[in-house]
Image 1: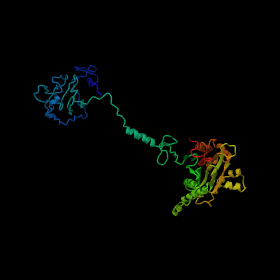
Image 2: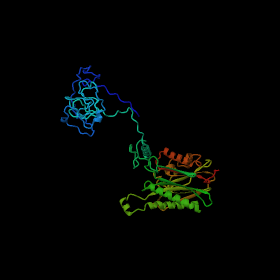
Image 3: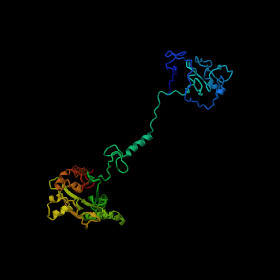
Image 4: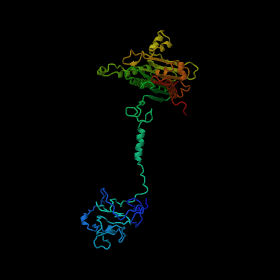
Length: 477
């Protein structure tokens, strides 16, 4: 934008800095004699970088010469008045005999001055434009006055949109701590601000597959989630649907329990989903699925002998398993260990039931008649399991059972992280929402929340499977 020209500042008294009027020979404030030449500055003056060499002081005897600068001399009109008490140097062209050249014989040497403009009342030579300061030259302050006028406003540069986009992407990609909500999360999964360990992928998992759903959570006491689950839907040879749910609980005292549960859940669910469409009976398919899961866990223990020598305290990976297959008229469950399956009718007009029996010390005491159920499960040895999947397990004995319920309901397939807080079938039915068949994921979340509210001492995993298996696309237009 255009700028208004700046007005030249009035000269001031070198003694008291009071403003002076044109033609003043003495300061009206302090009486300073303005005809006195001020002393030269102690610092080194600034030299004009115009590319021309400055003549030595001895070469300018009482006259001002600057070769080849006649054009600059024309910038100062001839005959301009000189400052009172100062040498007349106006209209200098540097050419002897030029009409516009004033006689400056006997004046102080001022080398390199061209285009001098006079300021009345200023001591020495003031208002110099394009002047080169020479050390020791009186009247030259060493300040350049040929700088362009500064604008009153500066245009703001628009931000680079690429920089803003990159900053936005970096902010989105940076993970923020779930605890303090301020620090960034490093590559190891810890907050750089408060040091809090961040949730892992398996700390909380949710999955809804058609009409069935499952939720798994690390709980409030464990440092990792050692549970796993597998869900799926298959079509039987007659076209009717079959729903599959597998839940596994890693044995914490074993090595790599999280890997064991994951391997078992995958192997069992994949085996069921492959066998059912071929026409294999659901109970036989469940048995084969448990055997396949056992082989998958056993394979985790296959390691070089040297690894055992360096870590003799490690034992084979192990886990428990419980699963269900639901068709249009049949309910099949299978298990090894102490994970459970419950039947909860939709109308609650008939009693709920527990469909599995634990492979545990407490169950053996009850079966032998040595303790009642309350006494056995109150013992500290109650949860010691007597059956599991793993290379160091006893002879594998898969348990399977089939049922034909006469009314609709849901099957709750869960680990002990849930049933520890709803052990009896009536307690479990009291926690399951009435609309569990229509909202399986919501119901699974409610059940996991019940365990966390109760203390969350263990990993919690639950799958909700409606019975009978609804026909795919039923109710759609």
